Amino acid sequence: MLPLLLLLGCGAPLPPFATLPPAFNTAGDPLRGAVLLSAFAFNQPAQATPAARLRAHAMLEWMAADFRWNPRWSEFTPVLGQQLDAARAEQRAALGMAPGLSPQAAVDALFAAAWAVETGAAPPVQPDAFPQRDRFLAAIVTPPALPVAAGAVSLAEAELRRIDTSGRFNGDGGSGGAHP
Image (cartoon, rainbow, N blue to C red; front, side, top):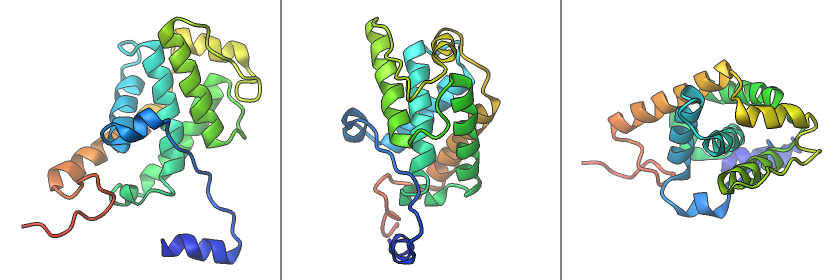
């Protein structure tokens, strides 16, 4: 919290922030779910449904923004933040997304598309989010190769497993208190 207050006091711009839809914030562990869902969808895109791939894109957007805010990421290697940023840039280019789109707008647009596809409706293609409409629609049908994104989410999954085996990550956002 102190670094955040120092940033506010210095007048430095705050890093972009994003939240997940309420369904993801009330069920289980959103960070763990984002890591595992995205690792599966990016590394086995042929096995993931189009809606699952779109949710994974939204989760990647969220993770890239959340890495700077959420203290739960502090046990993950700092390199992961850089890789998530690079993965987000790769993803946005492949999906025909606006490069300057806020993380929250990207998360919202991708989840809206996922829900539409899952229900059989046409995905909403907001021009401010997806100026390259045809590229986005094609990516829903044929997943683009995203090696940087696949690597970043694989690293996140490996780090999550490393932390799990150390017994330190309990999902409460803190250090877990005293351990026997």
